[in-house]
Image 1 (cartoon, rainbow, N blue to C red):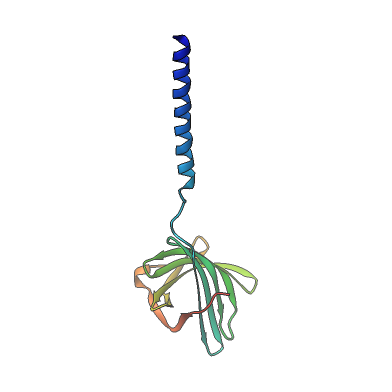
Image 2 (image 1 turned 90 degrees about the vertical axis):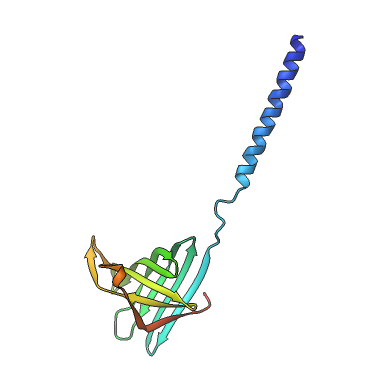
Length: 151
């Protein structure tokens, strides 16, 4: 009798341990994110001025590179990190100009596969140039960035 109870207990224990192991494998197979990283590149060339923006979008998070090469002005080369809210990108732009690192906010709207930059009144907060009121931003119609192949 003692032997049969011991055998039943071992069988039940074995079956329970197998069941727990199966659950563990299922959890490991579930992917962490269903969203793919989208890479997009944009450029505007107007006369001797060029603006280039290369971005990676994952969920609503955006990272990338932004370069302003404006004739007779200092070249600005840097990185952006921000958020895509609907068709609008709000980001912090950390860039180098004449060997000095600077920070400012940028905003772009995507329409018909092209990007237009917003401008507005700014102020300095904690060493960064930020928009005073994002609801009062206006579009810069001078530069429209078109989609280009990413390099």
